[in-house]
Image (cartoon, rainbow, N blue to C red; front, side, top):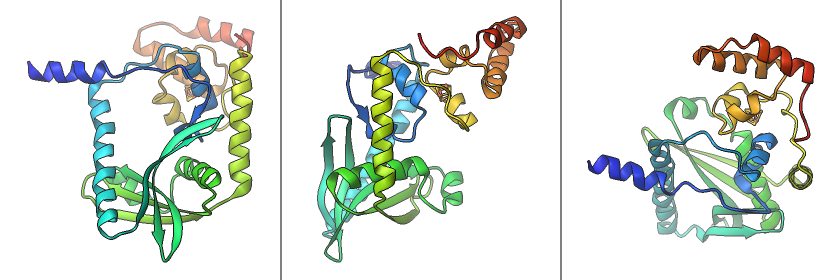
Length: 243
Ligand code: SF4
């Protein structure tokens, strides 16, 4: 009984806000999925359990920040960034040997933690934008293993070229949102990014690339639909870029 009420509480918190800017967490994400989000296409239902998993990540951050506070390393916490093109909130700014660093805390499962030898590319992109706008040339990641609280630490330096390219990409995407131009499927898109994408259903039916056809085939096999005819129509039509 109480379990159902908890589920409802989490589901009621899902909402998409109107916005004209990008979130820093979108740096490195598929631009097509961001476009769908701007246009408020219906999302795959997130279950309440997943939302509790995200919330658990917030508690991990609070716990690590509290230990950094105790050793006197924290200069600022949850620093907001509100530029015209991008908004975000970095986990903190820490000072080590009198030098400031932008800090990002991440939690990750045992499997990912074991394999992790460098920060994930999408995380580097996020931190790079904070470093750019805060004008702090150094950044630190702390990854925590969710299952046993082991830690790994990585340092990165500011890369002006990367930061400017990310901002330029956001500007191009904003133009595409305003002009109603659906971005193409990014080359070399990761199959798992598509499988977990909130807009999988909407995107896959408009795709004619090999991966898109494979995913559409699988999806329709699951629902018992013969996809051959649909695939042929998509191929005839080519990639639909303007809605
Ligand atoms: S399904 Fe893949 S290509 Fe399509 S929007 Fe999602 S991540 Fe991008």
